[in-house]
Image 1 (spheres, one colour):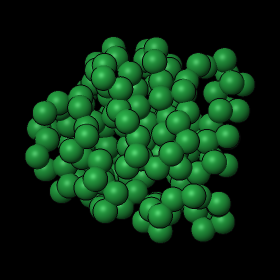
Image 2 (cartoon, rainbow, N blue to C red):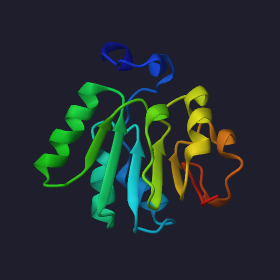
Image 3 (cartoon, rainbow, N blue to C red):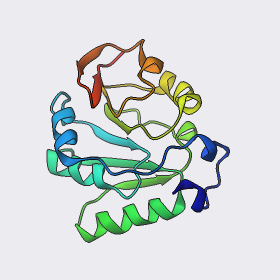
Length: 155
C-alpha cells in the first residue's frame, strides 16, 4: 500500500505496510503501562490505536504519520467519534517528542534504519506490537514480553 501513497519522505522505502492493530492485542499490551501522560502513536495510520487509547483512558493523544492520505483518514475517523487528538504529519525521525511523560506506541511501523534513529529520543514506556526489530530496543528494560508484543519501561 505504501507504494501507491504519495509520501514526501526519504524513508518511504523502509516503511512497513499499513495494518490496523487488533483490539485484543492492544488491550493486552496497554495493560502494562500507566494511562496518565500522553499517548504517542508512531505510524498512526488511520487512527485505530488512538481510538483504542482514548477508550483505555488516555486523555492526550498524538499520532505521527508520514503519509498525508493516512493522516487525513486518521483525522476524519477521530473527528467522527468526537475524539480529540493531534495528528502530526511528518516522518517519525523528525518528530519532536513532548517534554511531558509519554507512552510511545508502535505497531512495527518502520524498518531498522528508522528505528535506530528514534530509539535515542524515546522517553517513557514503549509498547511495541509485532516487534520485528526488537533488538534495536535491547537497551531498554522489558516490563512484559509476549509473542505479539513487548512492553519496555523507561530508561
